[in-house]
Image (cartoon, rainbow, N blue to C red):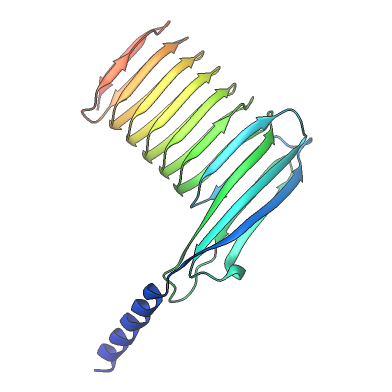
Length: 233
Protein backbone atom coordinates (compact mmCIF):
# COMPACT_ATOMS: atom_id res chain seq x y z
CA UNK A 1 0.00 0.00 0.00
CA UNK A 2 2.77 2.43 0.93
CA UNK A 3 4.56 1.60 -2.30
CA UNK A 4 1.39 2.37 -4.27
CA UNK A 5 1.00 5.69 -2.46
CA UNK A 6 4.60 6.61 -3.27
CA UNK A 7 4.00 5.90 -6.95
CA UNK A 8 0.92 8.15 -6.94
CA UNK A 9 2.78 10.96 -5.18
CA UNK A 10 5.70 10.77 -7.61
CA UNK A 11 3.30 10.76 -10.56
CA UNK A 12 1.56 13.87 -9.24
CA UNK A 13 4.90 15.62 -8.74
CA UNK A 14 5.93 14.88 -12.31
CA UNK A 15 2.54 16.09 -13.57
CA UNK A 16 2.84 19.34 -11.64
CA UNK A 17 6.36 19.84 -12.95
CA UNK A 18 5.20 19.27 -16.52
CA UNK A 19 2.34 21.77 -16.14
CA UNK A 20 4.80 24.37 -14.94
CA UNK A 21 7.15 24.11 -17.91
CA UNK A 22 7.76 27.50 -19.42
CA UNK A 23 10.42 28.46 -21.91
CA UNK A 24 12.67 31.14 -20.47
CA UNK A 25 15.34 32.92 -22.54
CA UNK A 26 18.42 33.76 -20.49
CA UNK A 27 20.01 35.99 -23.09
CA UNK A 28 23.48 35.84 -24.61
CA UNK A 29 26.72 34.95 -22.88
CA UNK A 30 30.15 35.60 -24.42
CA UNK A 31 33.38 33.63 -24.00
CA UNK A 32 36.85 34.36 -25.40
CA UNK A 33 40.03 32.25 -25.33
CA UNK A 34 43.47 32.99 -26.78
CA UNK A 35 44.24 30.24 -29.33
CA UNK A 36 47.52 31.14 -31.05
CA UNK A 37 49.30 28.18 -29.39
CA UNK A 38 46.40 25.73 -29.69
CA UNK A 39 45.74 23.04 -32.31
CA UNK A 40 42.24 21.72 -31.55
CA UNK A 41 38.80 22.85 -30.45
CA UNK A 42 36.57 20.21 -28.85
CA UNK A 43 32.90 21.10 -28.38
CA UNK A 44 30.53 19.34 -25.98
CA UNK A 45 27.02 20.71 -26.51
CA UNK A 46 24.21 18.16 -26.41
CA UNK A 47 21.25 20.38 -27.35
CA UNK A 48 21.35 23.43 -29.58
CA UNK A 49 22.50 24.88 -32.86
CA UNK A 50 26.25 25.06 -33.50
CA UNK A 51 27.79 27.42 -36.04
CA UNK A 52 31.56 27.56 -36.52
CA UNK A 53 33.23 30.01 -38.89
CA UNK A 54 36.97 30.06 -39.48
CA UNK A 55 38.69 33.42 -39.45
CA UNK A 56 42.11 34.98 -39.98
CA UNK A 57 41.14 38.27 -38.35
CA UNK A 58 41.81 37.10 -34.80
CA UNK A 59 43.96 34.53 -32.97
CA UNK A 60 41.30 33.95 -30.31
CA UNK A 61 38.21 31.73 -30.09
CA UNK A 62 35.10 33.87 -29.70
CA UNK A 63 31.84 32.27 -28.56
CA UNK A 64 28.36 33.74 -28.34
CA UNK A 65 25.98 31.42 -26.47
CA UNK A 66 22.22 31.98 -26.62
CA UNK A 67 20.70 30.07 -23.70
CA UNK A 68 17.06 29.02 -23.28
CA UNK A 69 15.64 26.77 -20.58
CA UNK A 70 12.40 25.15 -19.48
CA UNK A 71 12.07 24.67 -15.73
CA UNK A 72 15.81 24.52 -15.07
CA UNK A 73 17.66 26.59 -12.50
CA UNK A 74 20.32 28.91 -13.91
CA UNK A 75 22.86 27.50 -11.47
CA UNK A 76 22.66 24.18 -13.31
CA UNK A 77 24.12 25.59 -16.51
CA UNK A 78 27.74 24.72 -17.17
CA UNK A 79 29.21 27.00 -19.81
CA UNK A 80 32.96 27.32 -20.02
CA UNK A 81 35.81 27.63 -22.49
CA UNK A 82 39.29 26.64 -21.35
CA UNK A 83 42.45 25.04 -22.65
CA UNK A 84 44.65 22.12 -21.69
CA UNK A 85 47.95 21.54 -23.50
CA UNK A 86 47.22 22.14 -27.20
CA UNK A 87 43.42 21.77 -27.02
CA UNK A 88 40.55 24.17 -26.29
CA UNK A 89 37.44 22.69 -24.65
CA UNK A 90 34.03 24.33 -24.97
CA UNK A 91 31.41 22.83 -22.67
CA UNK A 92 27.75 23.85 -22.76
CA UNK A 93 25.59 21.55 -20.65
CA UNK A 94 22.96 21.41 -17.93
CA UNK A 95 23.30 19.38 -14.74
CA UNK A 96 20.41 17.02 -14.01
CA UNK A 97 17.81 18.07 -11.45
CA UNK A 98 15.95 15.65 -9.21
CA UNK A 99 12.26 15.36 -10.19
CA UNK A 100 12.74 17.91 -12.94
CA UNK A 101 11.15 17.51 -16.38
CA UNK A 102 12.86 20.60 -17.69
CA UNK A 103 15.22 20.97 -20.60
CA UNK A 104 17.82 23.42 -21.78
CA UNK A 105 19.17 24.57 -25.12
CA UNK A 106 22.41 26.41 -25.86
CA UNK A 107 22.83 27.80 -29.37
CA UNK A 108 26.49 28.50 -30.13
CA UNK A 109 27.99 30.92 -32.62
CA UNK A 110 31.75 30.40 -32.76
CA UNK A 111 34.47 32.30 -34.57
CA UNK A 112 37.72 30.36 -34.48
CA UNK A 113 41.17 30.67 -36.08
CA UNK A 114 41.11 28.68 -39.32
CA UNK A 115 44.04 26.45 -38.32
CA UNK A 116 42.20 24.71 -35.46
CA UNK A 117 41.03 21.13 -35.82
CA UNK A 118 37.35 20.87 -34.89
CA UNK A 119 35.67 18.02 -33.01
CA UNK A 120 32.00 17.98 -31.94
CA UNK A 121 31.19 15.31 -29.36
CA UNK A 122 27.89 13.38 -29.08
CA UNK A 123 25.62 16.17 -30.29
CA UNK A 124 21.99 15.11 -29.73
CA UNK A 125 19.72 17.76 -31.19
CA UNK A 126 20.18 20.85 -33.37
CA UNK A 127 21.63 21.87 -36.70
CA UNK A 128 25.39 22.20 -37.27
CA UNK A 129 27.10 24.57 -39.71
CA UNK A 130 30.87 24.70 -40.26
CA UNK A 131 32.55 27.06 -42.72
CA UNK A 132 36.04 28.09 -43.80
CA UNK A 133 38.26 25.84 -41.66
CA UNK A 134 41.77 24.80 -42.76
CA UNK A 135 42.22 21.68 -40.59
CA UNK A 136 40.30 18.48 -39.97
CA UNK A 137 36.68 18.35 -38.83
CA UNK A 138 35.04 15.49 -36.92
CA UNK A 139 31.34 15.43 -35.97
CA UNK A 140 29.33 12.90 -33.95
CA UNK A 141 25.64 13.79 -34.33
CA UNK A 142 22.32 12.15 -33.45
CA UNK A 143 19.63 14.51 -34.73
CA UNK A 144 19.95 17.62 -36.88
CA UNK A 145 21.07 18.82 -40.28
CA UNK A 146 24.78 19.34 -40.98
CA UNK A 147 26.24 21.82 -43.46
CA UNK A 148 30.01 21.93 -44.06
CA UNK A 149 31.61 24.10 -46.74
CA UNK A 150 35.05 25.34 -47.76
CA UNK A 151 37.18 23.21 -45.44
CA UNK A 152 40.69 21.96 -46.21
CA UNK A 153 41.30 19.13 -43.75
CA UNK A 154 39.86 15.60 -43.58
CA UNK A 155 36.13 15.52 -42.79
CA UNK A 156 34.57 12.72 -40.71
CA UNK A 157 30.85 12.72 -39.88
CA UNK A 158 28.72 10.15 -38.07
CA UNK A 159 25.03 11.06 -38.00
CA UNK A 160 21.79 9.21 -37.25
CA UNK A 161 18.96 11.53 -38.34
CA UNK A 162 19.39 14.60 -40.50
CA UNK A 163 20.36 15.90 -43.92
CA UNK A 164 24.01 16.49 -44.83
CA UNK A 165 25.25 19.12 -47.29
CA UNK A 166 29.00 19.08 -47.90
CA UNK A 167 30.64 21.40 -50.44
CA UNK A 168 34.14 22.45 -51.42
CA UNK A 169 36.13 20.01 -49.28
CA UNK A 170 39.78 19.92 -50.35
CA UNK A 171 40.66 16.69 -48.53
CA UNK A 172 39.18 13.23 -47.90
CA UNK A 173 35.70 12.70 -46.47
CA UNK A 174 34.30 9.77 -44.49
CA UNK A 175 30.55 9.88 -43.87
CA UNK A 176 28.10 7.57 -42.11
CA UNK A 177 24.46 8.67 -42.10
CA UNK A 178 21.65 6.38 -40.96
CA UNK A 179 18.66 8.41 -42.09
CA UNK A 180 18.51 11.51 -44.26
CA UNK A 181 19.60 13.07 -47.52
CA UNK A 182 23.31 13.43 -48.32
CA UNK A 183 24.48 16.02 -50.86
CA UNK A 184 28.21 16.08 -51.63
CA UNK A 185 29.83 18.29 -54.26
CA UNK A 186 33.41 19.34 -55.03
CA UNK A 187 35.59 17.03 -52.95
CA UNK A 188 39.24 17.06 -54.00
CA UNK A 189 40.15 13.94 -52.01
CA UNK A 190 38.51 10.52 -51.72
CA UNK A 191 34.98 9.84 -50.48
CA UNK A 192 33.92 6.95 -48.25
CA UNK A 193 30.18 7.13 -47.63
CA UNK A 194 27.89 4.76 -45.70
CA UNK A 195 24.24 5.40 -46.58
CA UNK A 196 21.38 4.03 -44.48
CA UNK A 197 17.72 4.82 -45.15
CA UNK A 198 18.31 7.93 -47.17
CA UNK A 199 19.51 9.30 -50.49
CA UNK A 200 22.91 10.30 -51.83
CA UNK A 201 23.80 12.83 -54.52
CA UNK A 202 27.56 12.73 -55.11
CA UNK A 203 29.38 14.85 -57.69
CA UNK A 204 32.83 16.24 -58.55
CA UNK A 205 35.07 13.93 -56.52
CA UNK A 206 38.79 14.19 -57.23
CA UNK A 207 39.83 10.68 -56.17
CA UNK A 208 38.17 7.33 -55.42
CA UNK A 209 34.62 6.95 -54.08
CA UNK A 210 33.37 4.00 -52.01
CA UNK A 211 29.64 3.87 -51.27
CA UNK A 212 28.05 1.31 -48.97
CA UNK A 213 24.26 1.21 -48.79
CA UNK A 214 22.12 -0.60 -46.21
CA UNK A 215 18.73 0.93 -47.17
CA UNK A 216 16.81 1.49 -50.39
CA UNK A 217 17.23 5.20 -51.07
CA UNK A 218 18.28 6.63 -54.41
CA UNK A 219 22.01 6.90 -55.14
CA UNK A 220 23.13 9.42 -57.77
CA UNK A 221 26.81 9.53 -58.75
CA UNK A 222 28.13 12.24 -61.03
CA UNK A 223 31.72 13.06 -61.94
CA UNK A 224 34.29 10.97 -60.03
CA UNK A 225 37.93 11.10 -61.21
CA UNK A 226 38.98 7.87 -59.52
CA UNK A 227 37.45 4.42 -59.11
CA UNK A 228 33.85 4.05 -57.91
CA UNK A 229 33.02 1.08 -55.67
CA UNK A 230 29.35 0.66 -54.79
CA UNK A 231 28.08 -2.16 -52.59
CA UNK A 232 25.10 -3.21 -50.46
CA UNK A 233 25.26 -4.38 -46.87
